[in-house]
Length: 93
Image 1 (cartoon, rainbow, N blue to C red):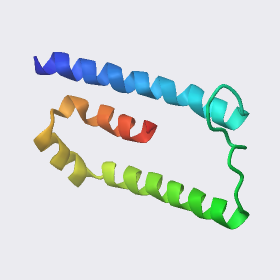
Image 2 (cartoon, one colour):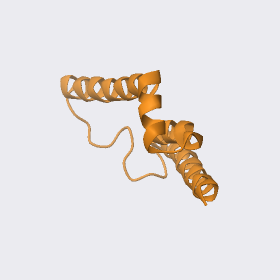
Image 3 (cartoon, helix red, strand yellow):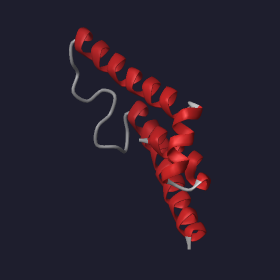
Image 4 (cartoon, one colour):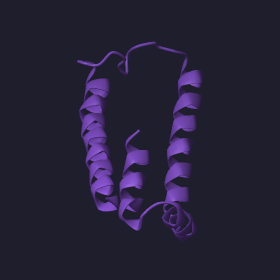
C-alpha cells in the first residue's frame, strides 16, 4: 500500500512540475497566463526587493533540503522513496 501511495504522490508531483514549466514560459513570454512579467509594473526598488526575497526563499529552501540532516529527519517521518519527489515538489512551487 505504501508503494502505491508513493507512486501516486510521485505522479502528482511530476504533474505539478509539468504544469510549472509552461506557466513559467507564459509568464516570461507574456501570453496565456493570468499574471505575466509585464502585469503590475512597480518601482525598480520594490521589484528588486521582491526578486531578492524570492531568490532568497528558493536558496534557503534548496540549502535546507539538500542537507543530509534534513534527509535523515525527513526519512524518519516519510518513506525514503518519496524523499527526492518531495524536494522536486518544493522546488516546483
